Length: 475
Image (tube, rainbow, N blue to C red):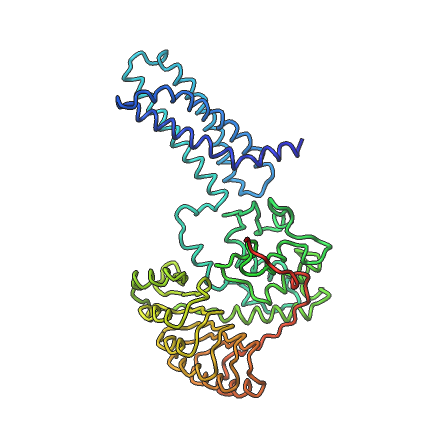
């Protein structure tokens, strides 16, 4: 029986749109039939009301069965369910009243007014019910909150673990994994929004999984758990999580999720009792270091950027977003514009007062492009990983006196190149993994920038089955 009700419930997303469309159409027919030209539409109103009422009943019934599966915010679910039932009842009664209106209102004018009033009440109730359904699916603020999505797409996570002092006594899930999920996953999988009917904001929901099944396969290799395997998919893969336009987890964060699942995904276990405690503490240390270096938006404000300048960048597929909901400062990412050239960087110059964060990862930027970057005086974060920049090109960054973070991972930069960074006294973090910089070069750079954290990477992640998977997109 449970299988049958669950099967019926799965039809709710299909059925729910039918009464909305049909009843709205009936309302339009009622309104238009007032005019002589459209009086023939009157014959279509009652059949439309009947169909709308029947589909309202079917929608309410299937919605009830779907609600039995759980995974929704209870108060909002109850309100949506009750309003859905009320809509079905009201639509059915309205059909009966409309069909027998002449028995209730002898006066033709009063009859028309009564029908129109009831129609308006029905449309209001229908709209309210639909809005509640949208809130269940997309989040309570989905209709008017335009900032959460754009903020999540670029800003680093506020992991909330910067004050963690005793790592051994920390509960791995509560103190480490949960903040990672909050920063990377709650935007789509929490009480406000449940994409794929999946919530990751509470232990019971994590254990339950979503419409595609469980996300943690306890007792199996981490690759068998969707919560981990989707993190490991290629960035461009359809099912990669988080989506490409969102901030991505670091290698340390992914390794911690893997270690947690590998050990059974306990929600109470402390770090100190894990079999691989030393490795876990290393990853936590790397994550803490990153969390403590989150960039601060300047206190002093700035004027709004030119709308035409932003539009010119967006026309090239370049992502331009605000660094905060009430800030005029901007973040620009070329994540979707890998083919952009040095000439395209000229489009950034009108934004030099507002631009704080710039992501040029895996683009075709060269020494000429860095000369343009050197003119962006307010830049605090610059990502040049896996680009073709050479040693001498870094001289162009000398004017960036406010730069706090520089990512050179996967470039051919060597000792000579990083020596040009010595004048950037505000640098707090320099990423040099997979570069040509030698230990001696790092030592010399540390001497000139003693407050900078030089990250040479090399975190040892275990070999995974997914490492040999080749992703083939649709043809």
